[in-house]
Image (cartoon, rainbow, N blue to C red; front, side, top):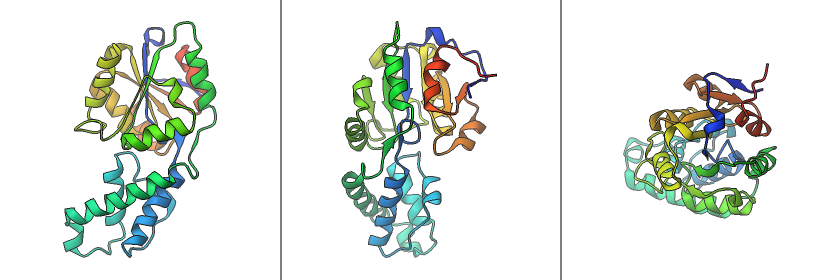
Length: 240
């Protein structure tokens, strides 16, 4: 179902910027497995997939930090040891790079929708802006056949800041010659909605991702419940 909460000028949109995890791809299982492999490596108890999934969205560093602190087993000296956190993050990233495509797949309807958008009469440019490190992000897009649709794929280590800071989105707009009022950020969490708002762009929330409740609380301009609805929403379709 498509719900417009504001009058988005869909006919004037020239740039679509997609989040990756929870929007284009279902990567939760590989991320959860990589977090638990890290916890096991350091002798900590593993966590449930649902809990780990709730930590996703603010980058790899924050994901592993939240997982390390969640069990409550770390002595204070380790909890506050930045060198330990860096070592854990490096272990996580090494494991994840090797296992990033074990279970990760594009969500149903994603490939068809991207193709439909690209085949339109006046197709907008498309880009990916994720808080995931850019190396794995590009490798996943290449591996799943998504990269062909995007002019830019940028990650959480492409800039000094991460979403919801607008730096990355503003860079994408400047690089591709778009203005805030002609740009739509598409994502599954409050981070993506806030990023769009902070950059003065429009936002589309995806209700099938990792954090639909938080996404809705953030107040996107338009919501969809399935990736197959992207092209319809961009034509201004309003589900009744």
